Length: 332
Ligand code: AQP
Image (cartoon, rainbow, N blue to C red; front, side, top):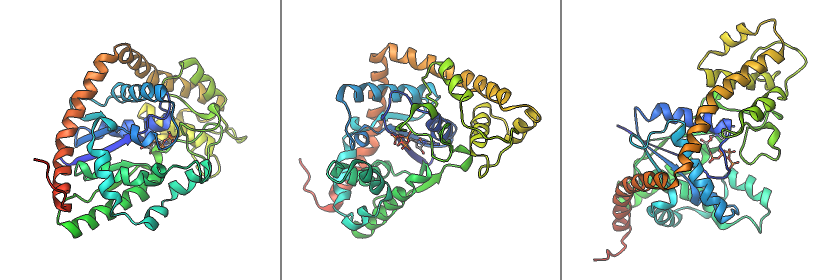
């Protein structure tokens, strides 16, 4: 089976609906046809300040959400990035073949450093894409499912793989990004032109996977719509309603058209009530399962350790080859 790699940052207590629909649901599907590696990328998370105790907890919680959403640790390799040392080691090697200017062109760094200010933006935030390249290349991944915003980082990964192969001989598989479909992009409920995000400034527009169902229902009832009053998909003129339709379709497995038909001639209130039910039915059991998993952290840690050992095997083989190729003396 072809290899696939993807990951998420443990940057909040709960994942949000965009992470679930845009990433987890797709991963769950793909794990059947690919040799998939799914990582909780804690080394990436510390490129911005994190509280140590909270980070540990968020890492477990993120892993639990992967499992509860249907990523099977016996089918996919589901592990914590920092458990596999090769990530940091390969990132160092790759940083030595990355141009300073090349890294400086990454738009995510420009955005994030503008947010934090030049002096509080870390060097780690600057080299974030190099660590991401290491994540992907360690496993000789062919495919990398990512959101649109990560496309540039996968391009850099390809460039680095090709550069390394050319300079030192064939070592890495050159990966391809699988860009998430437009219908899998979820927007903020209060601000439906910007993407739903774990780090949104206001909580009101974010649907958390682990939120109390009544709270999620309330947020949906208060979601921004428009004055037209008809439930139809029109991303440009009706971003709020279109976003709700996208969520409805993704979580119910129905087509947008059939949902439009069902609510034709009915108001937004009915439509939102219907959606709230769909969300509660889908997220409720996931939440229950997460709570069960978190109830036995030792068992969860054991699963993660076993999966990290599996990841180590593949990663170490690549790293050993890389060390040899660049001329590092083997320790005997
Ligand atoms: N709104 C979204 N719609 C669809 N997909 C989304 N993803 C995130 N938001 C949406 C997908 O989730 C995965 C997780 O990526 P990440 O944890 O590296 O962070 P992110 O993409 O930056 O997501 P967040 O929630 O906005 O996190 P923070 O606030 O921590 O930066 C990716 O596959 C992404 O496409």
